[in-house]
Length: 155
Image 1 (cartoon, rainbow, N blue to C red):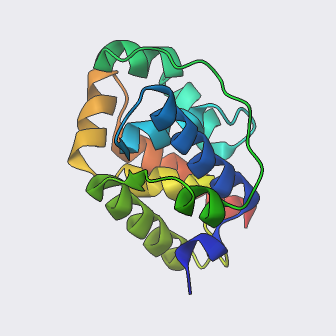
Image 2: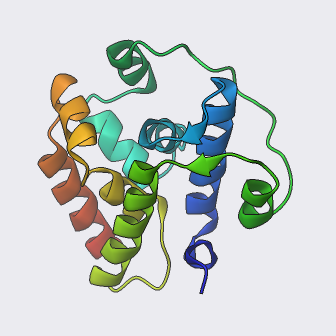
Image 3: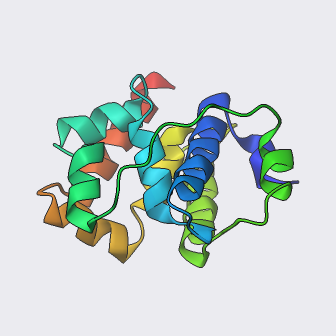
């Protein structure tokens, strides 16, 4: 089974926005930071809310990493799989590891689907992401704990 078949609409939207983020800066691959930025664009999700509560914003990430702001792009139609296959852009090794970790977190939490929150939990397993959050004054362990608690109470 293709891992993308397990994604909720919100998780699929995160990956599609991450793809758009990467395209917007002419990146060769979809990197974890592109996925993180796209999670923060989802104003109504647990993941975005927890990040905001920890003081992590799109602007703080962009500033910390010295990135340029990408203008929002119009959402294109089509399935996640068809859009990614239709483009030469692939996930970086670190992004692939985060997607695999997200699937594992979903299984551990006995979730039937992979959500944006699972994607965030997968991203937080990488040392690079943990270091970024620490530089922003946020704790990856605290974010992980809060997201996990909220997922358990919501389920």
